[in-house]
Image (cartoon, rainbow, N blue to C red):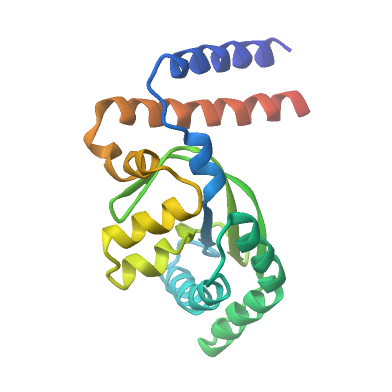
Length: 212
């Protein structure tokens, strides 16, 4: 109980610190996107290559299914229907590589630290995430934002104006879009994102300690 009380006190302190920093709606950022998370079986060179092969096989299938989706809810519904197909696509690619392994695909909330991707920086917190786990899923992972389609848009050289339109269309304000694209240039947002990351970790430890 003492551990839980200590963690709870730290949680409240961090939450208080966050409350005095400028905010532009990180909650809306969490609620607007779906992330793709591909976890390799291990850190061996072969398993890491297999991870990228599974990514390359799965991403176009998922992205095609999300075309025309105008909300995260609609995108999530399509992805749930697509899970069996994604598992088969990934497993088939591994068989082609003579590296058969079980693949599990799930869609649910997942905690992330602050992560940067191709000039974008997303605050730590819980995001709806499509997880593609190969084998035990104990190796280094790969991630991007699946909805809106940041994964393919960046890879295909999408213009910043088009990317901003896509994020604004699903609920972000232009100011919130600037937060995730310009946070590396702002000491205030770097601090806020770091506090969010630590707060997320403490919250997870409070939950774990309370469950014991």
